[in-house]
Every structure is written in C-alpha cells, then in structure tokens.
Amino acid sequence: MGYQFLNIFFFVFHTAFTLFNCVGWAFAKARKLHLFTMLLTVFSWFVLGIWYGWGYCACTEWHGQAREALGHQDRSNSYIHFLLLKLTGKNVDPQLVENATLIIFIACFVLNVVFHLIQRRKTANQS
Image (tube, rainbow, N blue to C red; front, side, top):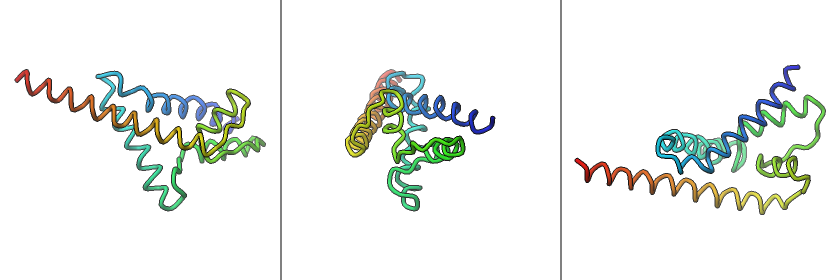
C-alpha cells in the first residue's frame, strides 16, 4: 500500500513541480516561488549531480525506487523521458529529451529573471 501511494504521489507531485517550472514565470504572484523551485532544480541537477551524476533528481530517484518495489522495471535517468514514455507509449531518444529539457529549463529561468527585472524597474519608476 505504501509504495503504491508513493508511486501516485510522485506522479502527481513531480509532474506538477515540473509543469510549474515551465509556466510559473508567467504569473507575477508566483514568480518568487517559481524562482525558488528553479533554484531547487539547479541545486539537484548541478550540485547533487557532482556526486550522483549530472542532472540528478531526488524525486526521480525516489519514484524509481518506489516503482521498483512495486515490480516495475521501467526506470529512466530522466523523469521527462519516463513521463513521455508513460503518457505516449513512445520511447523518444533520451538524449533529445535531455537536451530539450535543458533548453526549456534555461528559457524558463531566463524568463523569470527578465520579468523580475521588468517588475523591479516598474516599481522603481513608480517611487
């Protein structure tokens, strides 16, 4: 029962977290939280990645462990690759998925910073 709960929890939480990383920059009230989640992702990928491999994600690791405990043998190094496989049934080239994920991540991070700077400039001009 516990592993099935974790499997569902990680599908929902990790997917929502990932989607928020993609679109959170677009909502002014969510931008601080978005920046925080992006920085958590950077920490996981590039700091924890020093020890566990570049692009390491604790959520992906824990979800994979829960799925293995349930008898699933469908682990992927990338959550996005895993999600695409589960949602579409297609095994997209993992390197293509990793490259696209990184490009989208960088674009969303830059958009957040740009909108923060625009907001800061507007606030400064109103004072």
